[in-house]
Image (tube, rainbow, N blue to C red; front, side, top):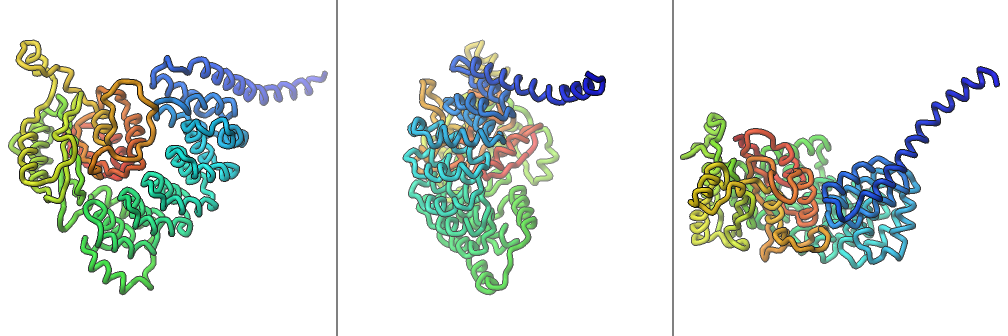
Length: 524
């Protein structure tokens, strides 16, 4: 063989060898995953194992990750779904459709069906449309939600009709999921009938999503219905409609529907939608500044709301004993306090806020550190007696744990332990959303929460904290955010976050944005 031929073969070998070696390495990782993954591993270990396979694009990897579609932990299941969704090989989409979605073997395996539906839709292959559309009629709510999400990610306009029909479903979670999917598809004509119809839905969660969807898909035909919502809604939804009108029109006639209606009567036929960029800038400003109301407002540390179903969640961990680090900033904000201790400032503000609540408001307060301590079992009316009792309860709040508590516990002066003062962000937020996480007995897998536990559902949460989580089922703020999304995705509760710490808060800002709330950093 000539030297030239040898050189050519050598070069070809160099070009071909790396992919073969990479494929072999991927296959090895898939085999190792099957050996490693199991019930004896912690949730964190299972999640990390899935992340190792994230990026491997093969049917073998998809089959291996199917194990995690049935995991009891939502964050683990979601990581597996996201890993499969990121695959590009058409053979993977074909496997999901033919071997799972169209396979009667999995007809009663709701978790696998839900995960496969989301992943198949997310891959964007048109072959997923028919099985996903059929799953909209599945008897399990979770599967319906997964199919709707999959159709939204798929973006196929053929889904408009079945999703519009689903948006009128009596089940609020299902109707809300259909609206989410239509917004994801992003076609104005496709979404119009469903969004306008959902404005009249019996479930407030659906009406709230419809109000926001008018802005998301830029529906000029939704402006008059928004004005009508301002007339008939009470509490938070009236404020949501007002905010949507401001964002859509770049005008502000305050929260009185009469001038809005008069303006629209004069201008409906000649008015054009503002540029998309201008509307998005207005929405961003609204999130940063907050919505100022001319009447019936409740204000807590710079965040205003018209909600009449409010839960205040207050951090009383040991770090809340720390003095506020920037008194000059407080003076610039026009705020003066009797004490500069973080919790003392919060108590003074909360007492003032509770005192000003309209009697039509239902409210409750939960303090948290390592554990949680609710003032009442459920929301109560803001009458004079309850507000007086709440003020007394607030004044008794003290920072838990810390060095002082440790000394008092050692000397027998207190039953509060030093480690009682850590920050259990997960427990606080799950409790606020009505999740029963205090029972360690084996329960079913964590699934989407579709209805509230409270007799009077909370629609707005004020979550106040001064630091990152330090104790709880998980202290990973990204996993906590994922759990909050699971619990709140189809509930529609606004979560406002007030951060009184000296540093950080970026992850908590994302938590607020992901749940339709405002983020305010007071600075500590």
